[in-house]
Image 1 (cartoon, rainbow, N blue to C red):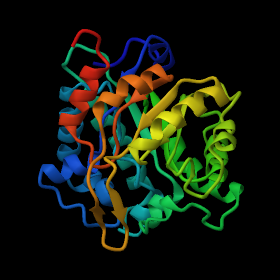
Image 2 (image 1 turned 90 degrees about the horizontal axis):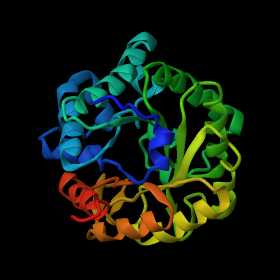
Image 3 (image 1 turned 180 degrees about the vertical axis):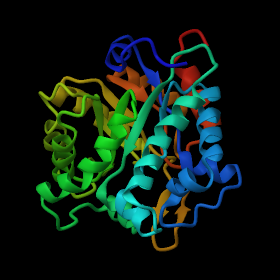
Length: 302
């Protein structure tokens, strides 16, 4: 159901379970995602599949649902012949589908509108490198139109996610100013640094003192590095942390496939919560069964 409590208020009362990877659930439903638009293509071609994927996570215990907007941009849809007006409708639809998936369960479900990094639009894996050769101002200009449309669609929070470097984080935080929606900021990291190689303490500090930011942390990274990142995010910003790593498998952008084995251990969720994480779930290759186990790990007495 539509939440009664404000998102920040709910965070202050205890951990909220995030959903898992949207793309892997869509593939499990039989969807073909071999397209530069990835899951965002289904906003136009199969919206019922997106709603069904969201609903699978809600049934598993997720109480924060992240929209299919990660790779949805004006530029990306323009390459498919979609007008700016049409793209704006699809971005708004992403919020509507997530909201609809949370109806009828008798519990509050919050909608996080996904705002992916610039590299996601390029569809070449560069969101795992950062350093696009663009200035902070240029990145801000890229992100602002999409953010304005998503904010107008009425999400509970904007998820500034899979951010590879602090420059893009700064641009995103400038772009959300005045939009009237709280945000969380989540970096993708490796080896205790941003994907662009910056120290995490400085990257997290970009959000310190910004009242619009309600949580800071990491996503789409190896689960092994999450605990230390959560502790650092809380120490640097004084804010709740967000933690939703991928399965531990690694994405091969050239082959467009995953390599390695899963190392995601849902039992770690309680430790992440103890370190200050208040938004806990999974990213790529983490499906509803695993999220159900995370939900049980975060529910006392289960």
